[in-house]
Image (cartoon, rainbow, N blue to C red; front, side, top):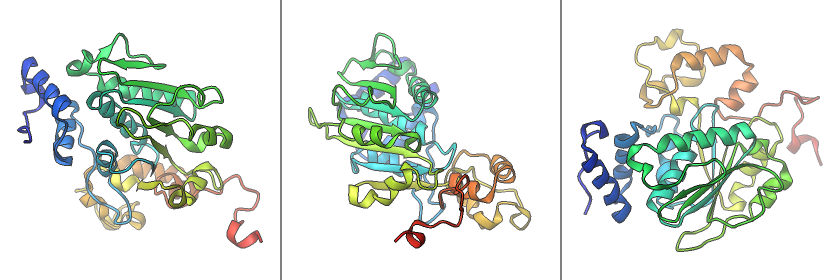
Length: 305
């Protein structure tokens, strides 16, 4: 039986909040709406749910599919500032709190990327959840009282060795070295009724980089691809004149049905500042940028026999 949807957390007593958290720790979540309501109540987050671009996937669909393990191995291909790392942190925290003995290793493409993931996870350790953490939440290792733990490291030959947690997350994989990426895929191992999984997050900003390879080989590798662009995470656009808007050629009015967080003005500003190639690859997720290549017209399928 599903528990009733509570008031926003700031309207509940400390006792009611604790009871609500413990209810879901004991009973789980009955359906996606109950999970998304919980996220909104306790962290004030409304994960974008609207299907703005028909060929793309709303971020909420990834969060739900990952938490309920409808998908194990997947790739989140999304725009810059599109919430890839944030959603990865959210799913990691939900798994750790509501699935006992869930172990997660997160490898970032850079030290800065790993730090960003750590800061996001720390942001979810609000007062209703602080008692669930054993000791201090550290970047190198965070232990929970239910036996779960989270490890966040920078991708390196050393960090891909060692224990075998059930869940592996690779953040900004386009910055990984191929050999480190290959070695990392051998990390996850099923244990304690939790199945092994690999989840990858990145933009595709290199013409023939690792992310390009990951997407190209996704079906063969058994990865489900979750793809969203700037319009899929954009705030609802209600006041701008579409005919005069600089985003019209790409948006075509779709942002009027959006329910995200990315400011329209920021998208316009970004489009003005970068080349069309960069805009398409890093914000629209249409194609990898070929900037930096000697011959931009080079096409692997056409020019290599």
